[in-house]
Image 1 (cartoon, rainbow, N blue to C red):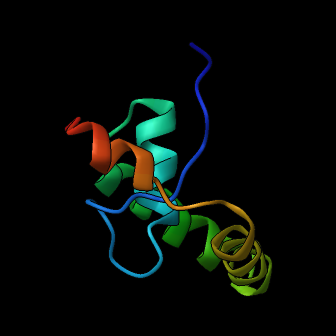
Image 2 (cartoon, rainbow, N blue to C red; image 1 turned 30 degrees about the horizontal axis):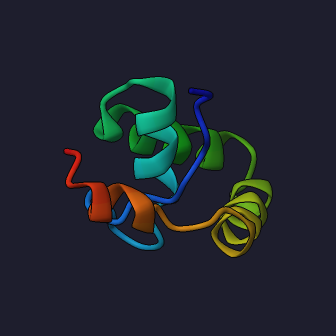
Image 3 (cartoon, one colour; image 1 turned 45 degrees about the vertical axis):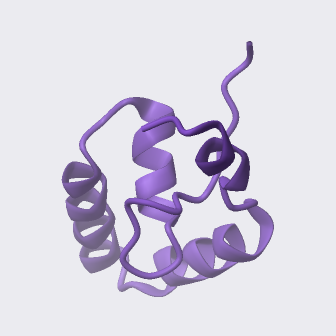
Amino acid sequence: MAKKLYRSTKDRMLAGVCGGLAEYLEMDPSVVRLLTVVIALVTSGAPVLVAYVVAACIVPEDTERDSRGEA
C-alpha cells in the first residue's frame, strides 16, 4: 500500500498540515512545526504562509483513517 499525504484530523493545531506531514515523514509533529517556524523566520514568512495555505486547500483530510480506527 502506497503512502499518501493527508491533513491530520487527530494531531492538528490549525489545518492539520504539519501533523499530516509528520505522519507521512514518520516524524514527531513538534519537530515539523518547529522546522516550519524556523524556515518562516529565515525566509521572512511569506513563502511558508503561502505554501501552508495552498497545502491546506489542496491536501485532503484523513477521514478514511478515522473510519478504519487506526491511531
